[in-house]
Image (cartoon, rainbow, N blue to C red):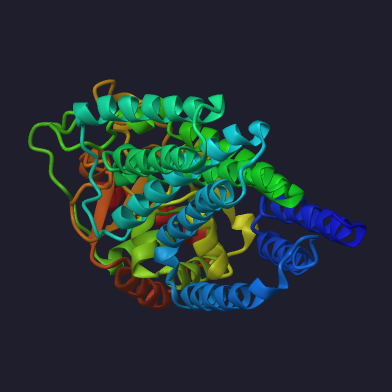
Length: 483
């Protein structure tokens, strides 16, 4: 590698690190993307000046880049925020597939050194698993295939057999006992088995675990890219892949910890599987109490503290701007408003944070679960917008619940709870939520966007109370509503 390309690669690596660091905060995340993208542009240009590059192939590369850039930018501009998780899944899968294909082609066209053969096999296997696994995750999130989990005993056995077969073929490839066409067939065979393994691994997993699955597939793609960097002797691929692999692994661990479940349980536990649903035993004669937008708005207007809990229902309805308007109106009235974010709310890590940032919700109003859970007992009203499993008290109180042990937002500790939901249909976990039958919970049924717009209209029509009478009137109203 000549020194100008080396310097360009070094600068690109630094921008990747800086961009990744900036992604840790919603305030700097957009600039972090821009910095990393600029670094990637530098790296792409520099790659054309690598020693040994065949100029006769440039036209093919340029055509492929143009097609890819057109498809990528077009998809990114058109995709709705609700579809962002599946877009991340499919783009991640393309990265894993590209790493696998690159390693296979390098082996076919240029026999690697013996020290690189293991990297070839591992890159092809891991990249292929990430490719098909990500495609299945995309199909589940896009509801092309059923999103429920399934407990298939044969799937675990088949996964084990496929995994052992892939390892055995990699060992055969490394021994050097195969060469030429035979070695190529072995490599193609293990790649095909890895493609099947990705399907078998992810298909039984339910939508409730998709945030963890996406993070895991992301880490696998990073590892595959780093291994491909060893195969191609490209330092930048090694650095970029290592960064993605490490960050994806950490994110997978954090997501599993947020759900209080090990990765093995996510992959083989069938969380949310179609079975007899667990959950807290509901009181005899438990009923759901409905409310109107006018009553809910009046309650919030006369409250001192309101916490809003966004969930996937908010994303589906594209109601982030309406919830921001509602929060602004309450703040103008002197009501303390905060947003509570669960680590796995939505369908991918950070989903709710991105939605609220898109609506320009001030960052100082957004609180993570650990920071706000202690405030619910002193909260007058909690407004739950389309969040189900992350507010289910069974996860905290019922050892027989399928989601027992998963940390939740303790919204049931608040004085009053208002839930915006389309129907009583369970969430991804397929488990009924006892919160909805709690006497202090009121349900406002309907599309989240339409319901929030009704709340906004109703809040505007509620007369502003005088400050001296606010707490007494609010307390009396809440006692009346509770009774």
